[in-house]
Amino acid sequence: MAIKTIPFDAADSLDTDAARVELFADALASGDPAIITSALGLIARARGISALARETGLSRETLYKALSDGGNPRLDTLLKVTQALGVRLSVAA
Image (tube, rainbow, N blue to C red; front, side, top):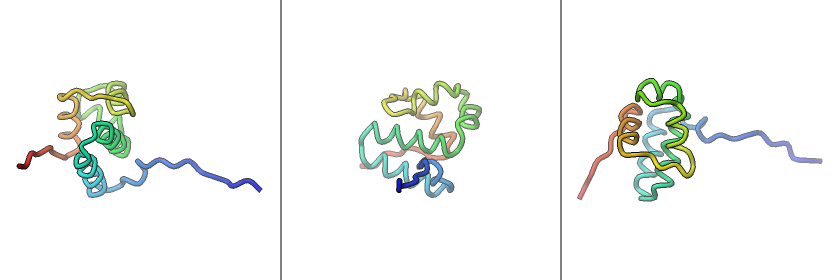
């Protein structure tokens, strides 16, 4: 008997602002650009790419490309996305 599986999307688990902020904080703490980009992509999908596109003034295609695995968002894109998501970057010594 074959095992029945169902698709899993981690974005479905990010249903609260606290969960999204925690994921982003952990990604930033990793210092790995690929992990940060991946986390932002998950958060964007959890919030809704179309809504995020409206809030940032960027196209959905631009967001998908910049926040996909292997994406490399420009600084202005990163700042627009984090602002729209209600998170901010900070520096500490």
